[in-house]
Length: 419
Image (cartoon, rainbow, N blue to C red; front, top):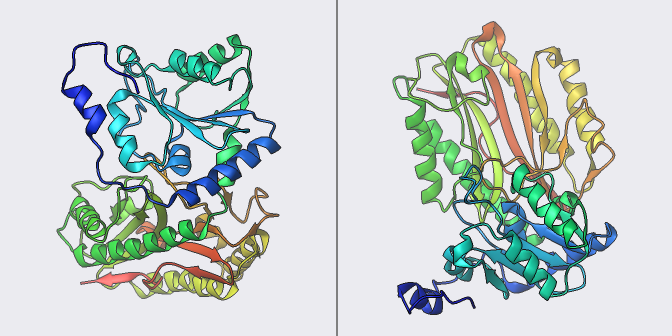
């Protein structure tokens, strides 16, 4: 363990003795199985050493989570922490600052954590390379996560140049963790189902809070309070509460805008449990919408029952895409759509909960794959309502397990009318 090069201080006592109660999310055998799957994928991709810096990847391998990943930090504090995995070794090495040394003790299964020298602050590249050389893990064919925002372009280029100077070949290793995480263990699927329970609680809190004169932020606050009380964590995306004509902007932010009488309100919630997300959204109205609006939305809502009846393990992606598209075309709704489709749900950290796997009726991407047991995706219906009064917006999370496939949302899909 690294000792500070000064006389003994409170820092030394902290590093030596402080061990908060464990909050590791899963037992060691779960993490061992994950590491084995990652190493098998590395072998397939001919990657000898993988350096994982994405928050999702670090969490998947070790349980690591914190509130700050230096995403937009000063140049003096580069985001160089991460986990090194070697294809031939059944352990990983966690590299981080001495300031996070206590953090990793309570939330990770790491058995080999190496803190940067304090004088380097957060710039650990040279330290990481020296340690990996001493371990005889370098030189190697090294995979870096090119598709992760962390580390940023400037730091990633520095890291890559240093690796090449040390005699290593550097390739894109992004697909290793992204593909391995697609199929989830029973323990992971249980987390997604619990996240669905929490999301339903958040939606009910929104329904109770929505009223004319209430601000979007007040409704947002009610959701956050309800999901936190239910054991939910901070989601990867700020959850939208959008009212009136603003509901036509589905990626807008809740604001101090007061919700009016007779308005459409779209609410998009993600429940989070052990960093696993389940995404559920519904459309509300402050007062009874016109018969035209209700009939239009009702026809869209019925598509979800069609989907429910079709769900099963190993459902082909193309079959689901075609089923939904054919229904909307037959109903004369297709030309009013926004986006219809979905994406993978799972581990996520701010600023995103959108997973790697994506599908929609107009794309051939992933169309030949199946929703195998151990996978979870959301599905979105976005349709512009008549007279531009707002958007009908509904999302549910689909969970595929051995012998079972189900929708996690419990609130009806029709527009939910509040007093």
